[in-house]
Image 1 (cartoon, rainbow, N blue to C red):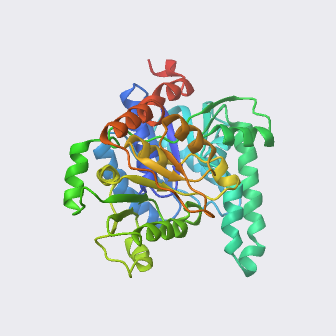
Image 2: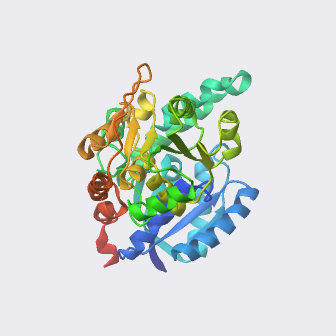
Image 3: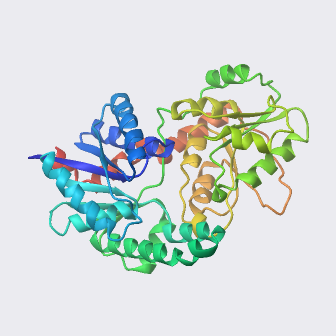
Amino acid sequence: MKKIGIFLHYGSLDKTIIESQVIAHVRDMSKAGVDMEVWSYAVTKKLYKENQKTAKDWSYRYNIPIRNFRAVRPGIPFSEILNAYLLKRHLNKENIIPTFIHCRTEYSASVAGFLKLINKFTLIWDCRGDTKNEFLLQRQKWKGIKKWLSFIKLCSIKFRIWWSLKQADKAIFVSDALKELHNNREKLSHRTTVIPCVASSEYFYFDEHLRSITRNKLHLEPSDTVFVYSGSDAPWQCFEETIRLIIKFIKQGSDFKAIILTPDTNKIRYFLEDYPRERIICLSVTLPQVNAYLNAADFGILLRRPGPINHVASPTKFAEYCLAGLRVITTNAVEQVNNFGTYLGNIVIYDFDKELILPRPFSNEERHKVAFRAKNILSREAIIDKYLRVYDYKYHI
């Protein structure tokens, strides 16, 4: 029987966040000597076919084993137990004994928690955010029977969080605030580690030559002040507020321009149809392409509203902005962003109810300094040793 570590994931593989936070992570761990694989479970037939292609592409690109399986939908009663049974079957079929299972989200941890009742391994819960309050925000838009029945899903989420805390041998939290939140819910008796969401310095860095090439490609003048937004139209990312802020600057003069990097360009262009495309550049790009546009910009925009979800968050986009040496226009909603931004000296605090006084853009020298300091705290390389301790490296020596 082969002994390996498993990164367990339920859902779509074809997302930038999965590529940067799961696939790249396993690649880096494999380089550090940790023998592990990605096990991805698709909950629909269509998603399974999509994941098959993505798994093949990424396995080739990153040179790591990625296995794709079918699973029961999380909404089905007792799906955690049913999926634990499927996981057990697949482990037996593949002749594998997991030394540890790294579970992204409390659903994966719940499934592994039931498997742990009959199999011996180290269960690591990777807690990415405040799932309960994220759901409460989401259901505010629901109506009728859907909203009335939403309490069932809320109960499921609460159970999964409780079960994850109970069954996990170790827990990873993306921020100190998130760790404290769960410590208040139930005293954490197992080993915990705080590891922020980071970005790869292989993909994100500052280079003045790359900046010059990209700005020329986009027909940007040396005198142009350029803002960049990288994200989606999700409400918690303050998309509409970001667009309003961009438009406010665009109206101030022809030397203000913006780059918007988003998966759904058509939807966002609808909001911007009255503005010339050469002044608001809207693109859908792959993860390795993002850095060129961050280099071309002068200010990154990362707005969040104060609230429990954002207070405990650790935005990956902030790490990407910082590694590219950008000044970041942000609010005081995210504790970790404020702490890291104060240390790096690159945040511009924005208040939704006040006019923003825009400082000058960083010089190339200042951007290099910010990027260098950010690499020490917000790059994948900076947190490898923490993960090796979590995985108990003695298994893989």
